[in-house]
Image 1 (tube, rainbow, N blue to C red):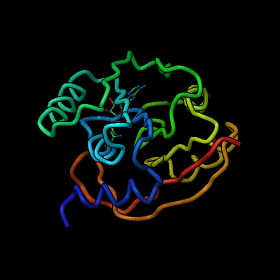
Image 2 (image 1 turned 135 degrees about the vertical axis):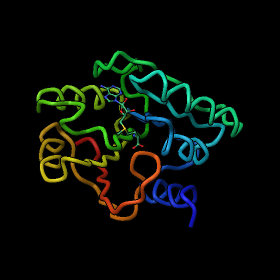
Image 3 (image 1 turned 60 degrees about the vertical axis):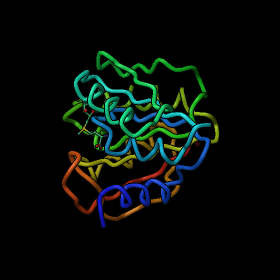
Length: 174
Ligand SMILES: C[S@@+](CC[C@H](N)C(=O)[O-])C[C@H]1O[C@@H](n2cnc3c(N)ncnc32)[C@H](O)[C@@H]1O
């Protein structure tokens, strides 16, 4: 199976569906952003947030080639501050970003989670692939007022190209 159908299937299993507003925090060049935009469709929207301008340029080129107009680029300085209103998104993707390489201290990760919590609608969920931090992530996220709703284990795409087995955890607001 090619990478694209595989990613679509994972995202649908996580609960991404037509019409949703999704924030892909630390989206990179779009391995998950582009398929998410296809699923949410024209009535939905994907906010693609990253601190690396180059990967966002790459992502927007891919979006244009694919004819996707529902991806909104969000450049940031790396501060865990999200330029969106309170309770405005249905889903936040935190894929291979919630770990000490990018957020070295538990305090940094907690600030990120607080900000994510702020922009989530009451019914929203987060999908976290806690790569590099598999054992501690769940406790930290639950301590930030989320509860674990479901887990998805399967083949994921790492660094845009490598297939590997991984686990994505879905949490909702408590
Ligand atoms: C390992 S990549 C993961 C990309 C994508 N989520 C995926 O799974 O394919 C992590 C991305 O997060 C971005 N990033 C790291 N820290 C960030 C921060 N504080 N704010 C915004 N983006 C950040 C990096 O620039 C990089 O593009």
